[in-house]
Image 1 (cartoon, rainbow, N blue to C red):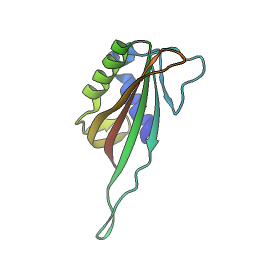
Image 2: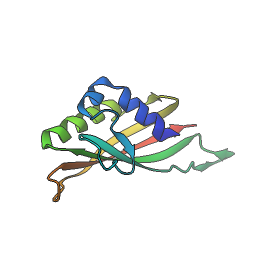
Image 3: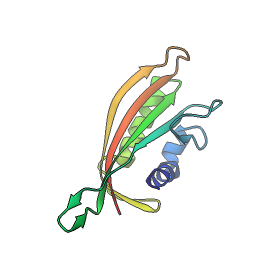
Image 4: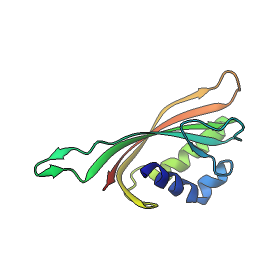
Length: 129
């Protein structure tokens, strides 16, 4: 599954892994006792387009990353590293291949109850299948 490949690709980067708590990239929500910084991701499934003679070899996807950290500087460092790794990237990610990757910052907020910072990134890309 493409989300597992992207997770493995991100965690394999020593700079990004060094900015996060150990193994701290999770589907949809963070575990209750998860240390920060951490990332929760959601994937909007791609539907391959119909083309003359069949179905396109490319599937568009949108990966939303919710980044949580205790400080604004922590958020910015993680955003910068994800941007370095994925913006404009075309190539292998673990067992899959992606292309045309674009990273966009949607918003940055302060979580009122905890005082933690949160950033939402959207990554649009194509999976070649």
